[in-house]
Length: 215
Image (cartoon, rainbow, N blue to C red):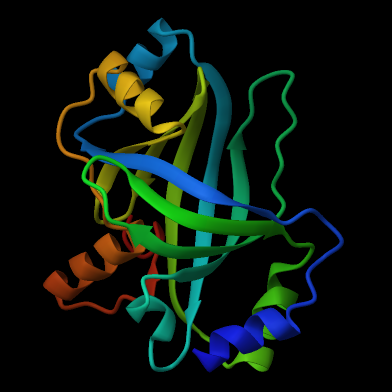
């Protein structure tokens, strides 16, 4: 994939630490967030805040990244709520995710991300230097908690509804799922893939899937 190589050659990156690690998480569809929220509070989880995330995804015109199971996005944050004593970080992020490793109960994939000073400037760099184009913009409302070694996210998405994501060590993910009373199978698909598939079923444009368009 020549375009991907060009991106990493030309991307200058800000003078910050670039974090790269295997992301281990499990995602579950839920009917309502209230019961899980109550279970989190009963388990002593720390509430970290709530934000509106707007993600812009990029790929080559031929869809090379998607075909390889990879993803490249710029994430903007709008802080909706912050608990007392915690300082919210609303800085934009650039993230690259590698292919998902085959697994039945969790999703494991390489993730490299870094904070960026300007989402607009980074979008121009990606498109001008590497030949990528923006393929989709999606939004979600995310309520975040810390519970032991795990991070638990209560997510709400247009068209799809409510989900729980649990990220952490594999064994602790399963323990946390049981502790919170979450049933059902882990969903391996990405939010981007699930939303684009839902738009396909509805025979509607999938380039912008936001709460404003789908309240």
